[in-house]
Image (tube, one colour):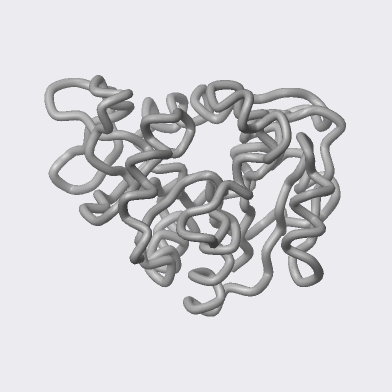
Amino acid sequence: MKVMLLAAGRGERLRPLTDTTPKPLLKINKASLITRHLNRLHAADFFDIVINVSHLGEKIIRHVGDGPRYSSEKQPLEAAGGVCLALEREMLDKHKAFALINADIFCDYDYSRLRAGAKTVSTTKSCHLILAANPPEHPQGDFSLSANGVLLPPHGDTYTYTGIGVFHPSLFEKLKAEEKHKLLPILQAQIKKQKATAEIHDGLWHDTGTPAALARARKHWKI
């Protein structure tokens, strides 16, 4: 299964830090976030990896080096827009499920479990998300979850999307390449069709998109 790491974002909430350092190159105990993802993916036997880059993308390419393929964007295209462009460039298979991971998160999720999600997506569903407990910056959460793992609109107990998921490429086939497209409307459409599933990750997870979240992540550097 192919994996796409989303690394093109501007990181507005972390400015001025991200004026000179792209978010995926922020470090937790001397190791960049994107290096941690790549190490964990390799440990789970994922080696066919695409990284989309835009803001300070040349720094990411120099840091990571050869191995992954890079999908350069003239401007950040949001998550779904980045996927659409990678599909257009035939960096992702247009008929097989792939994993999509935000490169600026910090977590200990076992990436080998993504293969089980891919089996679900390849048979009866269209996407499978990894959820976590709501962080202080996002107490309302994103989604709810049925007893049998079907993703639901937020009501009652809610959880936050970790930025890790498995998607079928057909979800992006009607999008125009080189344009910005957010992922949320796609997920909401699949929820209405009851075609989205999810699981809850109860281990460590941090969205490093704010100074407070980044500081919390750096307290867990021993991972």
